[in-house]
Image (cartoon, rainbow, N blue to C red; front, side):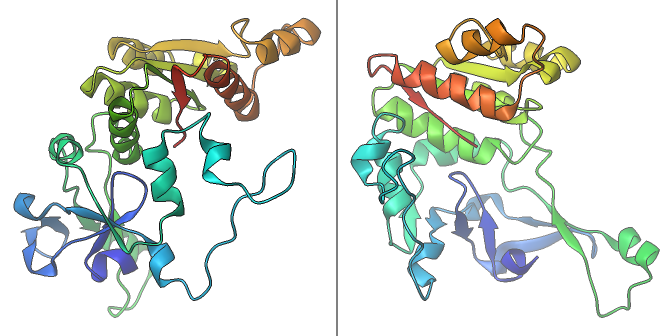
Length: 258
């Protein structure tokens, strides 16, 4: 709500983007608000620029020392690493990313008036939510997936590996990879893989490969299955497999997280 009222919305790379409030118009009087298509943001807002104290750097898991760009290089392309450590207030959104995002963005800001009524709220209190179910994968995760797929493609990445729990992120990245002709390899928590066959079908329809985790494709997965053949999996295990698949690729693959 605060971001929407300030004329700021969350977009592609998980950052915030500035838009002009002049373009917000009511589609259904007082209940649904949509930014004009021509005013889709052209830059992401980086909150680091306005923090009174910079965020501390992440620590290396083995050395317990601050990580530098070189520590992330085996996992991410340098263009994304540069964004992560940038202190610039605005970062330009590439035209190719904006073009893909325009397929469904801007997404509507909706006033939850019936929820307000159910809660018995006074007229001075209003509840709004940003509806992201209009994206091709059905969630907000496609916003960052498109950007990550684009930057990896530009960097020459030949394959992206990732994990997914319920399948929303895997679906988002699989679809985004297809927009740029970039193969995607998804490790989904096994119990969810078995319970949600339509997520698997969507991911495969996008041309991506998907495996129930733990799997026999990685040493991490094989080790777990050797001790517990019926392991239902976990997000931590799926992350381990996706990262192992990346770092053992000889530099041809990168990892993406959402």
